[in-house]
Length: 394
Image (cartoon, rainbow, N blue to C red; front, side):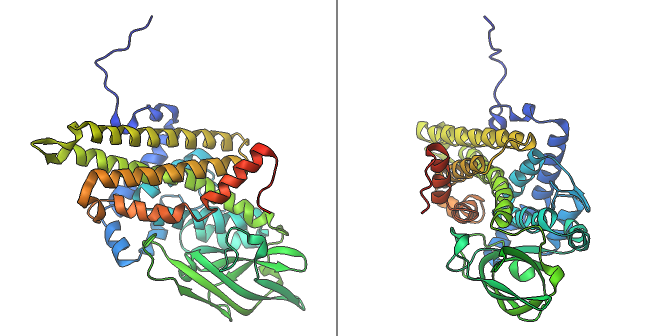
């Protein structure tokens, strides 16, 4: 019987040695993004959150390190693996959910929509600039009365000669007011179609949503389309049903599976460091059983979520990942991250509610993440349908 070397201690920040499951290239990509986040984001993100802003120059900087649309092929995109993209989302969200949202909306929603459903001319016009961060995109699907049920959208597009006329409203749109192009989905007589609406188009206006207590380091907007006239070549030619936007959402949800792990890890590590430094009753609070129980539980959830994300990443790279799998990943990992954040907040005590530490910021952000790209309830129903063969949506 083999005997474990008791002199070798586990690494608290890689308890299950997940690093060993990654390729050299995957580790290099992860480390590059982690260094960018630690150098460029972490020192200032608390201030950005407090001031409800995010520097737009970050888009070009993210383009320079090659993470915008990195999982797409051609047109200036890196063509990285799904696992590498997931690791990137994990490191970005360890900085802030708003940062990962910027990248997810750019690459997995706006760029993916053009890459998967657009014409060659549309790809050539937009994708290289978007990959470089020179142009920002947004994705207009959600409406005030059509969140979990996109089939009830009211935005419509009708033909007028060779042109299209769009009329409607979109809500909760990340990057909306700063986007150079909006991918807008609308009902037509031919089914649900996607349209590229450049900034400055007559009748197209935006207004930001203020007084948010979550995702403050992120631009969230309302899109207003008042009989917007678009030429025939503004339509995404390959998308003719809800399959178009839903395929984009699945890409974004996959990134969230990983991103939630990054937020949870940041909270766990903050709590671990704090518990070793903070003294009460003349000893570190890490020496008390109840705090060790909290730390053990958080480590369990972070490592379990990491392994789930990695498994789904490998499935995606092998072409075996289904939307139902992504639903399980998002439901499990975001809920786990929320619980980790709340537990970490308790470990930090009163300090846990200040922006001197990342925990309350992540906790507030995750309250949005658990809702967008499909609420926890909806993903539970998707899993239930897959298990039983019965669709409970209607």
